[in-house]
Image 1 (cartoon, rainbow, N blue to C red):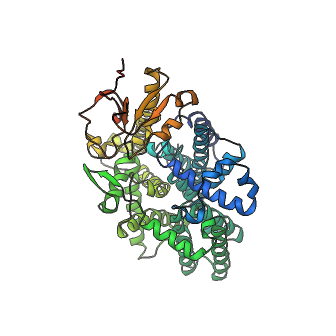
Image 2: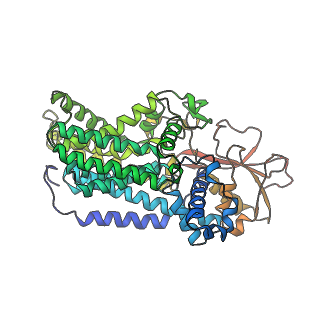
Image 3: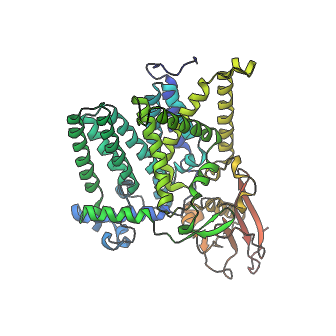
Length: 542
């Protein structure tokens, strides 16, 4: 590696293809390792409702011939009809076309499709980094950092809301940068298509059209784009985006503007009245302090990336001040400002609007690729710095940075492998100790499947009565067991009927002192779940 990342390195190295090839194969091998999250059934319902609605219009026989649709609600009366469905509905369509009726196979299909979309997001981040730094190596480093983000990596396989939106948002950011660098009708059309995909998954995707038009206007004011070109391409982009968003979101069809506005207002202050466990206190999600998202980001992102982001963001702000308030100077700085806006804007919005957030910062995952691009800017700044008063270290500074980076990344990889498939409970050193007493750990309920598998392995009776917490049903995880094991489990809803009680401690972080713990499972040093034998049961495990 030379002492400059400023010159183009020509065609990407075979290392890029090797990395993405290995990542793709890895995903195909491990996508069925993960449990099922509490939201996946809701996501599937959202897709099935819209699929039924559209099929009844265009192909009613498709619905009439499939009894699965008999229990599916109508879109007009469905509670969550304002959810984006561009991912959910095609996956449900594929499920029904393949006649997949087994619960486990249905959700494994969803896990596979979630990974494939997330894989596309990693590619988009690579392209963004390669373009911004004019070097495939930095693009590849950014892609590796995204993969070596433990929580995000795990959610690539089951988070069909936030991880999918993050990936599509990265793709749309990629097309947006291409369009802003050289506005053409073709690039406007591709960006409109990508923005539609992001918006029709999560309404927060509307941030991209706002920034695209705003940056296009500034480029005109800077004299970087001719007004005629901006007007023509910008108009096509806005018209096409609006048309595509409406066309691919059936909820909008009756009243496109009104329903889009209603969806945005609903998401801005989401209708979730549950509690979160934050810094040792239980509180309503609607009453979280302003620093909730910031703290979660700081304690769940590898420290290397946080340091790089702080350096990069500081550099971008300093450049802004040195330009006498000119927003940017040149194409690279324009991209930096865009990436910083994609991070700061949403964070500022959730604080100002006092938005409902829960389950960590997953509703803000879409800002993470931009964070990593800014972190690359900071890393490059540190690598280029040449201290003059550090003796031998001054002469070997670049090598030292590379070594520290490799060690940090290697440590993150080690923890990911050790915790597999529970990388979602990763915390960095800033989280401190006794994390279970301060923060939610397995809020998704993914570990219930592992707990049920353990019970099946030690108790071979033909019928086993299991109970989970009332607020987090375990039926979803039972459905992920192989059919033969699934049929042995009877889910009961009272202690008097239960032989086993299994919990991930969500909304009950305190110990269960009135029950006999027979198994506790940990990942990355954190408690995930416990299994208790119910003493009033006639059955006593060995």
